Image (cartoon, rainbow, N blue to C red; front, side, top):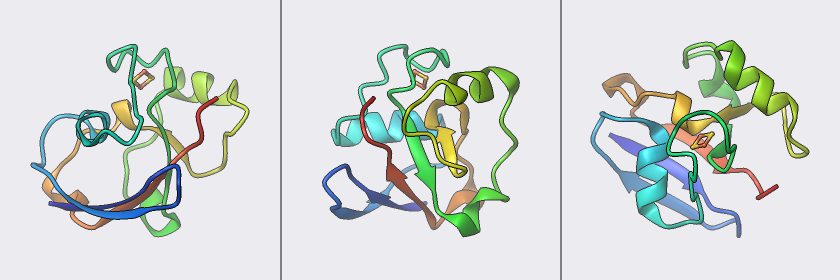
Length: 103
Ligand code: FES
């Protein structure tokens, strides 16, 4: 599937990835500065991204631990998600997102 990723410097990238694993795992491999130091345990927030508005409703709802962690973040927006909590599937082809600034 293809993803459109805007990095923290505003650079836009078209990325090809397999529809498996979490979105965080794909972003971490890209080396745009997503360190994911908790390894996807929903506790570090370094995998924070902003989802393009047209994609927000197509993703599964946040679980409470994701919402709790996001609520603590300075750079939180309405379209914030933790990418480690999103499992990539075929239906996510074309997903657009922007990496949130580091806290
Ligand atoms: Fe740590 Fe997502 S990788 S919260």
